[in-house]
Length: 272
Image (cartoon, rainbow, N blue to C red):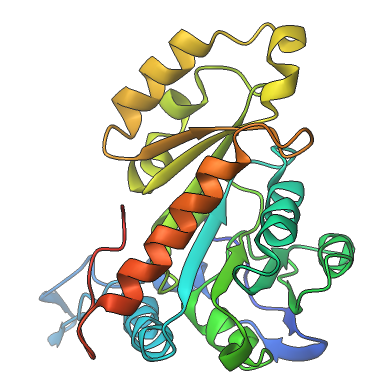
């Protein structure tokens, strides 16, 4: 995963049109903590082992506390490229209009094409362009969230970088991690990327209107999801036709209500 692959070695990250320096120096950090107590030429070298994700975990908890105080429901939507994330998020926002207010943070390596598409729904959108970094992290989300008036938002959706590997490691402070599996990707995707699917609270089978044309075996796909993410709530829907969307929207409404009923200052499991 990302903590081993050395992605994003420096460079610029753009958040809401503002440039920030990337702090991802993975290649250097990987060498720390492997030679505890070794002696060289009469001196002793002591290396302190610290998780590469320790800083991110602290940032995620800060985000979670901030979002909790705002009574926001926060989704981290992850998938491989081309699974239909942007259309799914856009149609979710459109169908929630008049019911819940949606804001979106979009992560992509390059371009703001997805952000432009989402803005056509009349919702606040902030673009994070990560350059060479293959995931979003808690600090990026903190900076991007500051660009949105969260007092005017009920549901904050984070569209993560299209990648089923590295984002699995990074807690962003979300309430629900939502992983998408399109019928065009193959039924074995959950078995090929078990950490991501296992980490998800929700699994959504998308593009269900194309299942027959794609030769999608629903029974096998559900069985594989059961093996990789047995604890996740599963939805089957088509963002294009609207089939299955009502059940998904009701789930979000119930999840938000559960969060808002939680005692002040206390994190609770939002999964319903």
